[in-house]
Image (tube, rainbow, N blue to C red; front, side, top):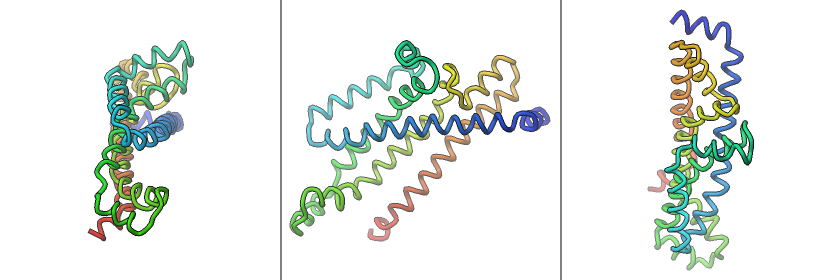
Length: 213
């Protein structure tokens, strides 16, 4: 504990800078994944061929280790944030994509018929009925993606993108278990904390559905 306290006493500013870098890389990756996966998931629910194609394609990409994607991306994007964000976005797309599909495929038919009977246009039905009902499932996919990305963003440090992975690499290089402990535990806490925050946000946003039920 004394060594850990000494680390924070001497390197607190660098530590919090690493935390901010880790969050920035992770959230940017998830944001890009959302912009790709949600529209693609919605479109795929209307086309079975596209649905199978996207699920297989991104499922195949997810099997490939993120470190391998980083290595492949370096000749094209160089080192730093860009290849790290690419690899992490690929990791984040599948859970958001799948949950978007599930959210729109499991909409209650009776509710959709009611909306149609009320004379709602397709646009009104989508924004006022379909998307609000599918949102909790989509948001669950986003929460899963955030947790996975934060846990995997340690790889970014290997290509100079910063983050908490740098602390872990430093601990390995110096063979200091206290630095390894700080880096590993910090990533775990950050991942769990963000997951819990998003869980509470999701519960708050969808509270009207629970009240109605």
